[in-house]
Amino acid sequence: MALAAAGASAQTAWVSSEKDHAITLVDLQTQAVAGVINTCKRPRHMQLAPGGKRLYVACGDSSEADIIDVATRKSVARIPLGDDPEAFDFSADGKALYVSAEDEGELQTLDAATGKKIAAVPVGKEPEGVKTSPDGKLVYVTSEVANMVHVIDAASGKLVKNIAVGKRPRRMAFSPDGAQLWVSNELGASLSVINTKDHSVLATVPLELKGARAEDITPVGVAMARDGKTLFVGMGRANHVGFVDVASRKLVKTVLVGRRAWHVATTKDDSRLVVTNGLSDDVTIVDVAGAKALKSVPVGRVPYMSVIVE
Image (cartoon, rainbow, N blue to C red):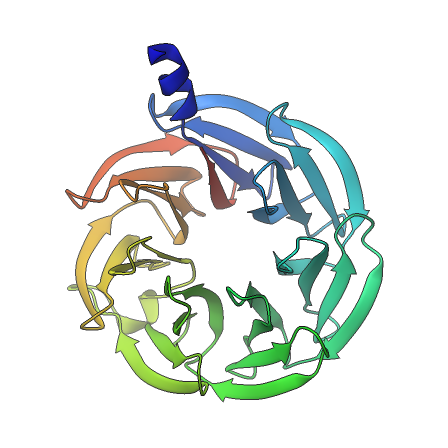
């Protein structure tokens, strides 16, 4: 029973490496590399499909998604994902993918099994982050050039609203109740907080760091704690991860990590963060309670993001 429990609680970070065309597996208990999986060219955004049994990997240079069985750690299929795909998310039933197509300036809906295009909706130039609402009814897309979040009705495929946010919005995270959407503004050194009921901007949260210039604070990756009390944000060239108190909307803690803290991921119990550092070719494992970096683990060249499998 002890062995079974230990196995059930195993935590592994799957880290995409743009230059090595691979995924590095980092065991969060031993804080060491546990394996490498070769994948398609220039893997970046990754996400577990509903149910958690398969990992979808978007590869920019091969314009496809590699679908990997989590249990066997083997590729089971590859599907077309359009030219140079950015980010994606799943429909509520997991049957469709919503993909940001940067070159076309579209949000594309694809069949998750075949990659066949179902629909496309024009949005702002250089669409980036994609997030499906918790109820599956809306899809949110950030546009880096337009400085907007576009809201799209999933059923009709129609644009519902354009929301002006900070400069160069990138990624998003919902509060647990779905009432708020937090957006990172990479060139605005800030976060925008959106009320999902009327799609108004509730607040703009500035990110500051003693000794750092504003232009070096370039937030991209965000992750919301399961209890909704803390938002974690990678602060980019500032080389820190920030802890933002959701209630007061203030940056309350920062932790020094690696170079260009790009994306962040949390374990299910929120005890650990994994921060992907794109310019130091490593990930930093952070103890959340102590707000302390435990170890930086070398991974592949130019790591983009990590997904924690438990």
